[in-house]
Image 1 (spheres, rainbow, N blue to C red):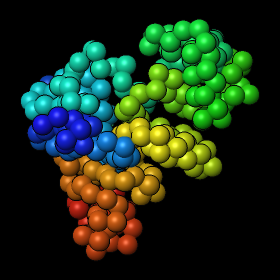
Image 2 (image 1 turned 30 degrees about the horizontal axis):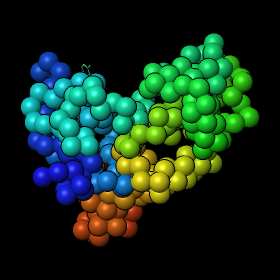
Image 3 (image 1 turned 120 degrees about the horizontal axis):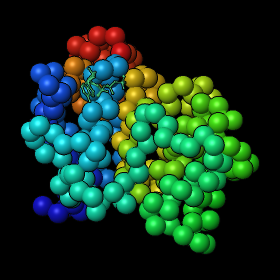
Image 4 (image 1 turned 120 degrees about the vertical axis):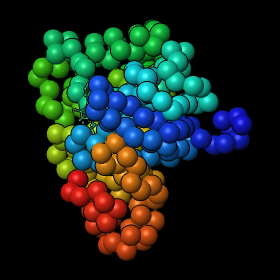
Length: 245
Ligand SMILES: Nc1ncnc2c1ncn2[C@@H]1O[C@H](COP(=O)(O)OP(=O)(O)OP(=O)(O)O)[C@@H](O)[C@H]1O
């Protein structure tokens, strides 16, 4: 079936991954539909980053399969269609924000006028337009996270994969990052985001709850709460056997 027929942007099928004897992902299956914000919710160590790295093609599953935009991963040729923001910021502290954006954008082949335009657009979206000339080592943690998000956006990816984009960010900025994600979704970008924060999970169109490398529940926030008879996401997570996130 073609991508447009299935409407699936990311397909994870029966994926297992172990590091040595430690099984980190155990028979994980999920689909992310085109144009939705899909969350991976789970406590630290539950396997979210490992799964995200497999989806971006940075690592390979032990068994099972993963496809993104209809292509079997890992596949080098598809990286220009994916924006990836890792958990730790991979920025150059001595360079200015502008120079960082220029460097990362040039890896995607952006040059000249288009490069300038895209940097302006991404900086605007993450509200860093007035800080572009500052060296990144003078940035706060939140500014670095927003700059990392901008570096993942300049090539206009169809799929955005964000590993804990709001970690270390205060509640006000966190809200603004989620607003930005909503804007991107409205533009048709598909977003996969990991979090261990319950109120962020609530903002996703659908989410998978992960515990010890297994998907313990999957659905819309409303469905998950209703099916488990819970008032809050936190209670739903506990009800599905997740314990404390
Ligand atoms: N390269 C590796 N070698 C060995 N063990 C690893 C490796 N990468 C991850 N792990 C282990 O896999 C488990 C899942 O880690 P992972 O980083 O995927 O979890 P997570 O849910 O993203 O957690 P966090 O929110 O803290 O980032 C952990 O027990 C971790 O120690």
